[in-house]
Structures are given as structure tokens and as C-alpha cells.
Image (cartoon, rainbow, N blue to C red; front, side, top):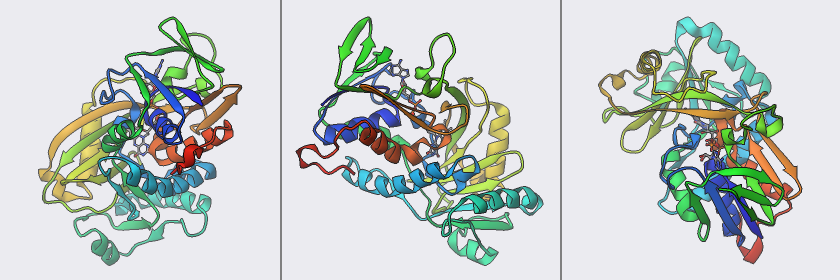
Amino acid sequence: MHIGIAGAGVLGRLLAWRLSRAGHRVAVYDPAAGPLARGAAGWTAAGMLSPSAELECADLQVFQDGLDSIGQWSDIVAALPGAPDFDCHGSLLLAHRGDGGAARRLVDLIERKAPEGHRPQPLAPAALARLEPDIHGPSLAWFLPHEGAINPLQLMPALHAGALGVDWHWQQPVDEVGGGFLAVGGERHAFDHVFDARGLGQRPADGPAQGCADVRGVRGEIFLVRAPDVRLSRPVRLLHPRHRVYIVPRRDHHFVIGATEIESEDRSPVSLRSTVELLAAAHSVLPGLAEARLVHADTNLRPALRDNLPLIEHAAGLTRINGLFRHGWMIAPAMTARAIHQAGISLSLSGASAA
Ligand SMILES: Cc1cc2nc3c(=O)[nH]c(=O)nc-3n(C[C@H](O)[C@H](O)[C@H](O)COP(=O)(O)OP(=O)(O)OC[C@H]3O[C@@H](n4cnc5c(N)ncnc54)[C@H](O)[C@@H]3O)c2cc1C
């Protein structure tokens, strides 16, 4: 089939990769300057794959998609160029003694929502010290064994490079998406099927919006630091009454520290307040970060729908996907596979195996 995709974020790239591997002819349009231009939210993300912890603000479908996607990521990264990182050693929830009440409420919420086997497992201090010897300070800890992380900075280019034969149209915003066509620069391009993966770009310029088009941006600020003396093997979240702070280890002693969640579409640089609060909170559990060097700070907008849940909408010749909010990387493999299947498009043409 000849398939058009509007948007080259994680969704657009993963759709293009899956469909091109299965032998379809694919064209992707995006306003970004090129495959490495960091406009899409996916470039800023920490890459945590944490279905249980995300139950804080998600439902069981998101949980299940997250779990399925972790299995799929392991196959996808193995098939991509450059061997992108994928770790699945579990994650930790941590809290300081004074914040125990708020932390227990959150852990209770996850326990009530998570299926058996995926609930937070309390960790005694000695067990925490064995798992992560450089963590000091928090007196409460829980282990979530099925969680992991990928590195979006490696995966965004790898998904582009691995989607062989795809026609990428950079600096070409789509003006209109309809059943079987994309309108670009005043010209209509016809396709057998189109996918709308424009994130915030799905919102109409004026007038009321519904479904996938009723999207808003939720500001997130994040830091990349380098600390050669700090050891951390898995993502950790500090449960704090005011902030959700996480630290995600990356290759070569790098650590991602994030992230704010602010109801604003402000894309301006990271604020002083967020810097002070996030970095101080991270340092309070990993004191070795005191000598870390700040490598990069970034801001982006998470595409979120009214209920903060993801949505797939189908019409003749058209599939829209949106609302991946704060877990886009975590659920994109399952969401794209389901969207393609529901659109009636085969992923096993030419005998290619779909990951
Ligand atoms: C600070 C931060 C931390 C995060 N951490 C995590 C995490 O740890 N784990 C996780 O799973 N998720 C995380 N996320 C969420 C994740 O990054 C997003 O859910 C995901 O990137 C959304 O992807 P998308 O492809 O739907 O949308 P987007 O990334 O918004 O991509 C939309 C694409 O459409 C393009 N576009 C816009 N308008 C048009 C147009 N008119 N025509 C054509 N193309 C257009 C844009 O240029 C863009 O490339 C985080 C996000 C942020 C901001």
C-alpha cells in the first residue's frame, strides 16, 4: 500500500519503520529541518518504560500497552542500526521519611490499580544498598521489577535510519489531513491510507476541537548531567509531595533528571525554580551528583488529551493517534501496532516479520 504519515515524532517514525519493513511505500511529512532537528517531544523525553509507576495517572490499557511495548522494544532495538540502549532491570520508588505519608498514598494507589505481580515491592534499606550502593538519604524504597528505559536520543535517529526506502519530506508541514490524502503547500497528495501523528499539530487553528484534535501541551523541563563517580543501574523516582523527580542513568556516566509537569504551552528555556527544585531533589537521593556537570537543559510539550489518555481514531482512509502525554515512548510500540492492525493494513507483506 501507499501510505502517508503526517508527523515524524516517535509515533510517526515508528509507524514509518513498521510499515516500510512490511513492504509498504511510505511518505512522511514534518515541519522539522531534518531528521536530527529536535522539535518533537520525543527528543526531550527521559525514555522511562514504567507501566506500573505510570498508573499514578494512567489506566489499565496504558499499563498493558506499556508492558507489551517493553517486550516489543527489545525486538525493535535489536533490529535497528547503532544498537540503541534498552535496559530492563526494574525501577525504584524512593521517599524521604518526612514524605512517607504522601509516598504511601501513591504506592497504595499503584497497588490498587496494578495487577498481581506488578505491584511495588517494599525494599529494606540493606536490600536497597545492595541494588544501588550510591543511593543515600531516602528511608523508604519500593522495587518495580518489570520496568526499564530506552534512550530516545539514540532511538529517534535509529528509527529514521532503519526505516529503509521511506520518502522523508522535511520542512513540509501538512496543512490538512483527510481520508486518503495529505495537503502540503497547497497540493493534495493521494494515498491508500494516511496516519495523522502530528501531536499538538492536530489541533485546528481556530474553532472547537474533538477527540485527537482536542489536544493541549503540558510543559516538561529536564536536565542531562554527567557524574563519572556516580553509579546507578536503573531509573529511580523520588516520591515527593510537591515534585515527581526521576533520575535515569544513561551511557558514559550521564544521568537524565526530570521532569516538571506544568499546565502551560510555554516552550521557553528551563526556569530557575525548576532547576533548583529538580536538581536539589535529585541530589538528596544521590549525593554523588554534587560534583556532576550540567550538560544540557531542555523544555518540550507533551501532547495530552482532556482525560490524559491516548486515543486512536479511524475513518475511511485515515487513522489519527494522539494524547501519548508523559508515556509516549512507553506505549508507542503497542499503539502503532494496534493502529495499523485496526486500519486493516498488513504487517507481514513480503514475509517480513513485524517486531
Ligand atoms: C520532559 C519530558 C519527559 C518525558 N519523559 C518520558 C518518559 O520518560 N517516558 C515516556 O514514555 N515518555 C516520556 N515523555 C513523553 C513522550 O516524549 C511523548 O509522549 C511523545 O514524544 C509524543 O510523541 P508523538 O509522536 O505523539 O508527538 P510529538 O513528539 O509531539 O511529535 C509530533 C510531530 O508532528 C510534527 N508536526 C506538527 N505539526 C505538523 C504538521 N502540520 N505537519 C506535519 N507534521 C507536524 C512535529 O514537528 C513533530 O515531529 C516525555 C516528554 C517530555 C516533554
